[in-house]
Length: 145
Image (tube, rainbow, N blue to C red; front, side):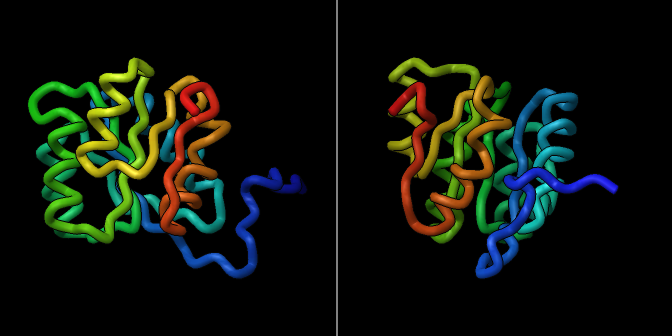
């Protein structure tokens, strides 16, 4: 029998975080879902491959948080975040991107994102980012802070 990693154990006082994943790369999305589903207090409600689907699913499912890629074809993460946070102010958005340039970070934060994590840090910092933003805080990954 294996023992779960400490990061997979939910603190006893935490409610289940309901998350929507949005990324145009299916393989990355699938691996991210597998990773998050190992964490006891996180439940992935659904996945979307573009910004339009993200806006629709955020309205239908009312997740606690949306993890969204910034650079996607069609409706990008910045515009999708703007629409999601305007229609569902209680939904917390965490950007997950390979782009660490100031313009992308500032664009997401201005659109209403509460967090920004680089994909290179996704598996080490995303769970913490989700917990911080759903507790009302703001999170920037270590390499951006």
